[in-house]
Image 1 (tube, helix red, strand yellow):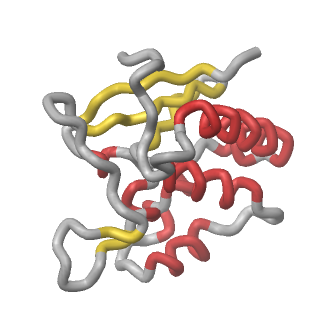
Image 2 (image 1 turned 180 degrees about the vertical axis):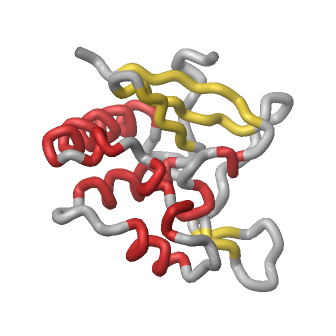
Image 3 (image 1 turned 90 degrees about the vertical axis):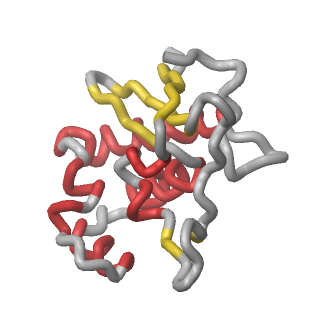
Length: 143
């Protein structure tokens, strides 16, 4: 079965759950992040990837978020949201971390392995070699 996904356009890229945790602002440089924030598409907004996995809609606004998601869910044992929150060094509690908001059923080892496989497949379809910091949304379903 092929992975199910589509794109939508949002007014800002920060609407994705992983955006805050992946894109770290540079001190003294407003609107500058590491890794870089995704670019806005003129007259549309920001391309947002929706991955349908079972009954869940997983949302990403940049390839760096896909990479982070894959890296975290591939880790054995799964890190705690407290450990991951500490890496961001921000005043947001661990209960606000994207991993704590991920449904528990998706954290089970077998399900996690399947989810990582699906996300990796989708990544290969929507992220090009020439521009690895943005989605190639043009040839895919748009909601």
